[in-house]
Length: 488
Image (cartoon, rainbow, N blue to C red; front, side, top):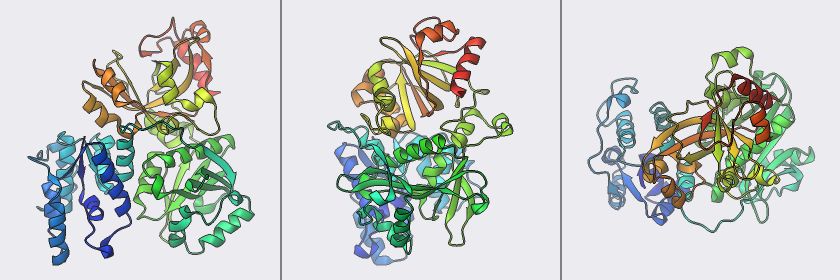
């Protein structure tokens, strides 16, 4: 795989002195090490080198030029095509940031590289509009993507443990950066302990890998009405970056919010915390307001109105109000047969019913996933509902997904680019599937709980027999019946 690094990744990768070492330097160093371990390639774009030439500090510029010599430059980079040019809001000047961003996106769009690694939110937004968002990664996402393809000794990931704040040692290293960002953090957390606030944590055997603290908020705060859950603290340790632990924590929070009938949830963070901003936007949080301190208030609702269900696309509706709510009125329903071994990997919490998502793989426990098969179906619309039918023994439906995107692909490399960090499939599995044209589906797992045996599916006209490949639910009676089960 080929990873193209943006300038904002190269700078922390190559600090010219201790003075210029940045907060992201250890994380980027870890990324470069994993790229090398995976025998992948790190590339830089000629446009990025030109951009770094604009540094007015002559000594630093000269040193960086010598340090960058060890990177391979992208040869014959693809030109900026019209779809990318159309994203430029104004006419750009040669060498300006917008022109460099366009050149980097062109390298991905033209398939000269597999992935672009950048912390630039504008580039990520443009990648979404170009339908290449899965290939434009933050350093954390890039680490998760590479780890998905490095053979390791499989060990169960730690469960997300529900606990109270007074069960957590305030001296744990995970709280170090929070102390520097928030004056009086220790006093605030001590108060959380006295109030017996609810928390969720990953780790705890020696130290905490991830932690979230929540509390029921009084209505009216920041203009937010209804029963509201505040996410007071949300943190993954630096050593656990790239394992998608943030997604595990958020999944636990969503589960807690649903079981306790919260209408909304909100979180605050500073604008420079780009990783958090993009993470929460991915799961339906949007900006509510800005505090006097400069902190952003991001809100997610779990209480859609009938008009919103009518006006929004099926996918947008699920992103904003999910993982529980699905716009069944606008979505086609598909039965997706899945072999037991892949069902165990994709849905371990259903297979084993453990405590809060402990299972066989961290990716299997998350919300964003990928499914691969050789089905003949040509395309699935975003927002379509996937009813996963576990084959073997008494077949049954007990997992639901909502389609983000899908593609038909002919080789393993294209599949790897598309599924990225979402996959639970090994390289060997992907190579086997790609002996024939593969259908790769990116989806979001809903937390709707179903357990419908094949006999019920037959009797209510959902299926006529055990499904051999992905098929749409054609019977109106069958669709109406299965929708009632989902809405229960």
